[in-house]
Image (cartoon, rainbow, N blue to C red; front, side, top):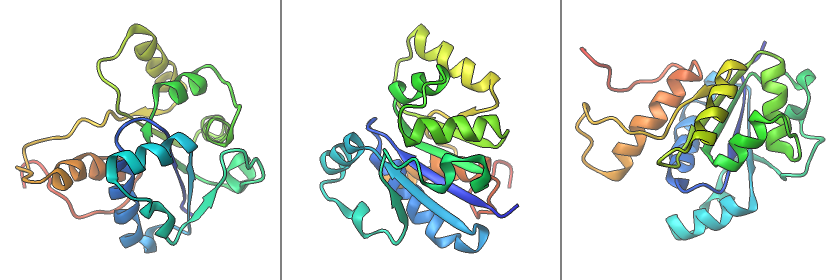
Length: 186
């Protein structure tokens, strides 16, 4: 199977994680055959608020509308093997955990899980309430990966960008991509 990746950006705080992920994936373009993006309306608003621009429009990627159920990753036959939701809002997480496929993101997550492919949810909210924790448990039991946007510090990041990259590199590792990054003990 070809390596096909879909990035979903929801309205949780943390647009910088999505930006850095897309930037890094563009440099790794020999490691995948398709890279698609779904961005919610709230995500566009949060991006504008947090990053002060609408530069997501400048990415040379295939963007799909949140209601476009004709997108190739809305079906298992589209053979997308990795879905990264970054940042993943708790509302999106809850709908996925509940099996509610009411938009392209939740439908695609349902497809990824039913096909036993890789779903990575980069949750950003904190603290977690019991509902969040149970939804994370449900998705984990269904085969998904919960990867909180919790940066690491042992590489001694000195900028926000470097700090964000510690999370993004972890996501890329989880996605099975070959990257050059800080490795413990090396």
